[in-house]
Length: 460
Image 1 (tube, rainbow, N blue to C red):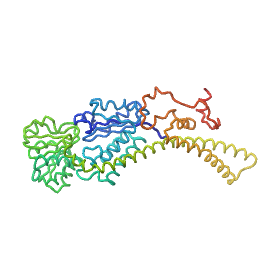
Image 2 (cartoon, rainbow, N blue to C red):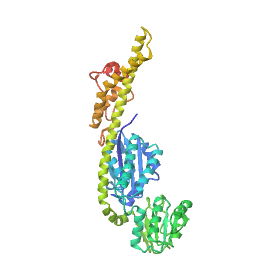
Image 3 (cartoon, one colour):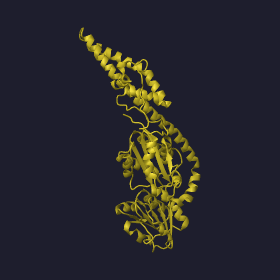
Image 4 (tube, helix red, strand yellow):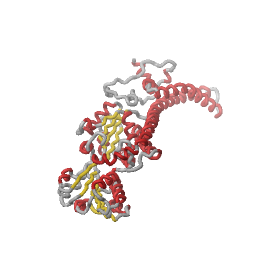
């Protein structure tokens, strides 16, 4: 059965929060966060996204109040002004904006698509993805891909890695220098590529798993080598610029390790931070983080302004399509229940009719087919108008009609649809009485009503 609900989300990102606040909302791993959210009362689906400049979580519940309660722990240690609280429709739009790169520090950057897909699969592995989030995130990814295919939103500086190298080049001469990249993930790979384009003579890749670092070293034509993470501090003594982007929960470079590095530009792209903030007090060490990249990305934002407007229009279009999809699925569930109920009645009555006719002589196959066709035709014609009415009801957010149809025709329906898309319902499931029809609708035969509903009506 298609289950419906409302999405509630929270976001802590560079848009309103500092690096420290993003770190406060971050988790050790997405799978663990999703599993914890799924264990919360009333949560049927959950999704979490964590990157170097954002930490977000979403849940699906029957009522928005349940969602807000489930997400409260995620942002408990974050200043209220740094948190974006999102209801159903805001969550849908926000996911599309994120996927399209509109909310990225580097407007239109490409890496967020891969990060979104990775988080999607991680959340799925934790049993967090159900029909509602599946549709929402799949649509967001589709929007992100459309944005980059149909507009110029990703022209120019396209990643935090390249923005970091641009920042470093403003502070010191990179040509002929040695650079240290700490971390062999996607961001580390992008940083290495950008450093090669900037003209450095040598790149050292440090990573906990040396083969991964070796792989990145082999992708650039500049002289490059791989070392273990424990050798990063020593390598920093030979580097003019250090760019860090690991997933380590602890600092990988501290003030003691950088004490002998001399004049060095350190740019920390990790979340949580790779470089101990106190290292900025070491003589010769200049430490920058993602908050410091705003000036680098400002010119890119200006160039992509026209493309961004095109993407916003695209999001409006896709958002309307997504809402229509949700409404259609709600109507389809009621319509399916109606036809299944009618099919049960039809089969029962056809069997009765055939038995009566065969009491006067056995029917041949052609005669049986005529009876079956007659029954099918009657069901189709009788349900044609109700089918259209249910689709219209969904399009107009008339969930009372949909609910009544479900109660009449679906024995498994539990009595209540969640609020319509975007509605911030203040009543909990327990606070709201289950609605059900108090009389047999006009034109409906008692024989056509599922026994459990008829029994309720009789009790009244």
